[in-house]
Length: 412
Image (cartoon, rainbow, N blue to C red; front, side):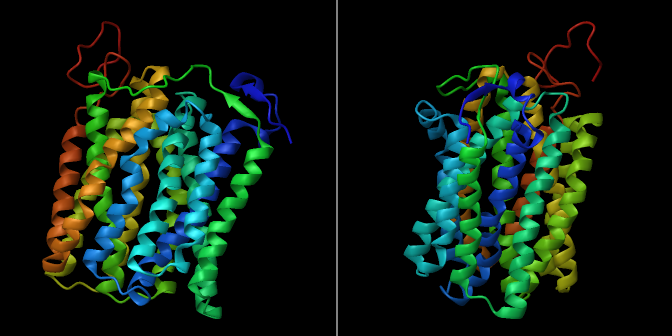
């Protein structure tokens, strides 16, 4: 198996299955086998086997986000390991952490296995974002990112589909499910290690932390995204189990619906962003999420039935599919050499609130679950305000609407 280093230009002569975009798609499809298995089973596993309450799930999710907060460490690691290699090592680590989950069903045990898998997940996501923005040309990035997100949804769809069938017809044990889900991700990472050459991006990346004043809006959007998304990740599915008593196959079937919708919707989002720009996409996403979170709170105010909660969950996922507009916005304003270190910085910023929020919000959940979702609506509304500052045509030197418009450039 070839392990030579090739430039992106040289890689165009390779068979399509060995080109850089294909590797991004393969990794995107492999990651969910571990992560989707872990997340689909988690709420039922911690309630039925580990005896968790809202506070414990909040602590677990806070620990899960610590590696995201430490993503800045990627800058040091890539001094020793190429980004492509680090992505595959991290993918394998995610698989190993997932595989071991059911072997340690205590509170302390789950904290350890969750941390290991999360370290792999967050380092993979950090490096993968960097590789995407380095390997994809700006004019094609939104469309290709849409297809990559569709590949992630397809991987999740297969994983969730197997879980539904296995639980519905064979009453699959938790340990077998976790071993299989994690094992598939490890196997794909090992295959990709040997099957693809090392690809060399045209712009060398700075191997130090980069913080630039002109990226302030990007940092702010990342911070709010992490805070808002964390409430959804931790509490939306937990609500389905705690409030409505959803079983594993029912909750996983809901996930299946989400990912079928995303497979169709994500490429459309990519084309939409390519045509109308990041600002419009962000405006729609954050306005929609504000409404969804208010309606989540309404589930407690008006005691609406399960089908309303399930519909909101699907709509929520569709709006989150638009989140890669932040990536392409940054790609347009960034110095090409800043992409790798800035991806690490952005992931750390994204996880500042993600680390600090789950535990106190878990306590708030015990008293007033509706207040948790009302807070998320306020965060989405804040993100909407920030997105209004994104220019219609972002570029270096014109990162916000406050920047002076150079002569001859398109009007806002």
